[in-house]
Image (cartoon, rainbow, N blue to C red; front, side):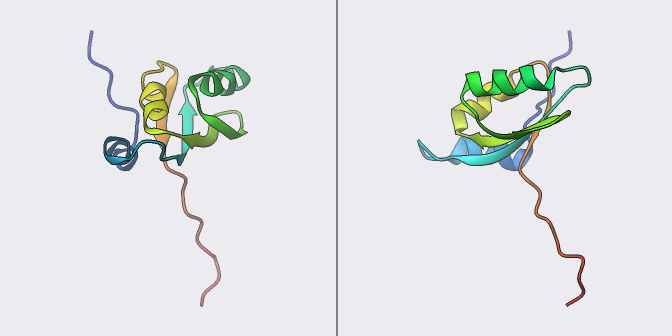
Length: 92
């Protein structure tokens, strides 16, 4: 069996390794097709994520380094990313 590729984005993985105890950061957990969104949010909360928002394909919440590590081990997780910065569509 081939080893599972890392699902945690590199910048979050660096943060996890270097963060001080008690630090928290926002993360977006994207899950595989067919995953029950409610079940995913419940499991993430059980692991220790402070769930802020959920939808059909992802859950947004706050994590500690240890919680991020645990989320990365879940087989139904496709990717864990930092929140994206929205840019203004205005010129100027």
